[in-house]
Length: 173
Image (cartoon, rainbow, N blue to C red; front, side, top):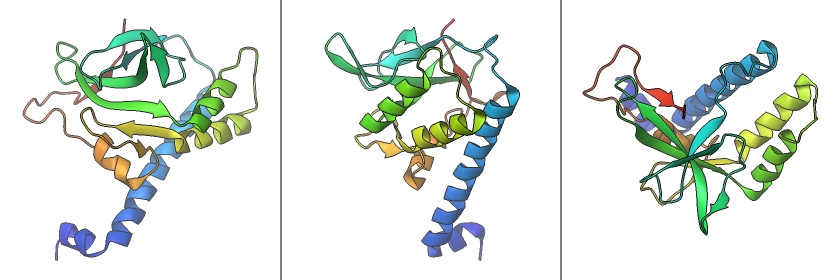
């Protein structure tokens, strides 16, 4: 019996493995944030946003709490990737916060606050649980820590366009 058949016959095991992989990724990211110290030298200051499900996008401050209203429509963050060193930009997934997530994000980004690393990790963990993602064109938003979100994030967007770097997220200049 192959791995695929085993996973299909054991959905609980599949869910557990998916949750473990997501958990390890979150720990890895948070570890880098807490122990690398504040570094804004190469950090982007702008991000891409969309009001039409990823068909078009605009740039704005990366520290905006999403969703927000832009020209009377709900704007959410759209994550663009490239497979050809930036020539083509592909909207891969969109992101927004729940109402509670927006409050957490705004609290974390208050000016003149310098919480300790433990508080930062706790807030980021709470925020991850309050982050919703979806693919352009899909109706359903998934909580980022939900096993269903794996299908949103694990897309093979460079299929047939093999590159040395694979898909790379693109930020505004």
